[in-house]
Length: 61
Ligand code: SF4
Image 1 (cartoon, rainbow, N blue to C red):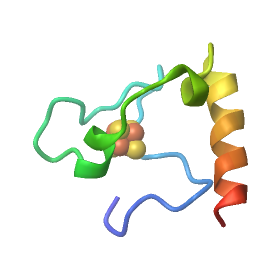
Image 2 (image 1 turned 90 degrees about the vertical axis):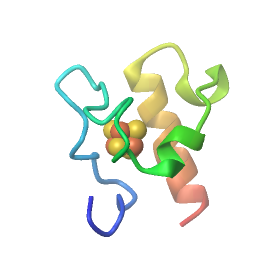
Image 3 (image 1 turned 120 degrees about the vertical axis):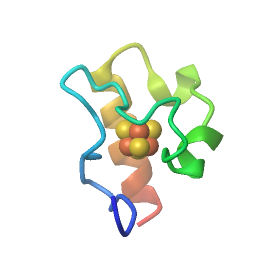
Image 4 (image 1 turned 90 degrees about the horizontal axis):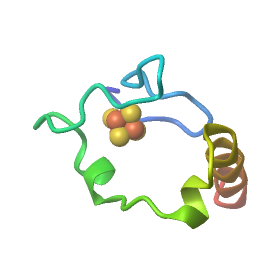
């Protein structure tokens, strides 16, 4: 996304299965590659991950 992904906005690079369309490509933002998935953030489902992300965005707003 040209100016970065705003909080609360779905990344335009996610496909219908929530997979990154830029994964493995040089144009993927460095910050995305620096994030290491872990259970505390990702949870056990898309829904758990989304709830955690919303909480973190609100805590850091
Ligand atoms: S890894 Fe980065 S570019 Fe890919 S979908 Fe997630 S936020 Fe978007």
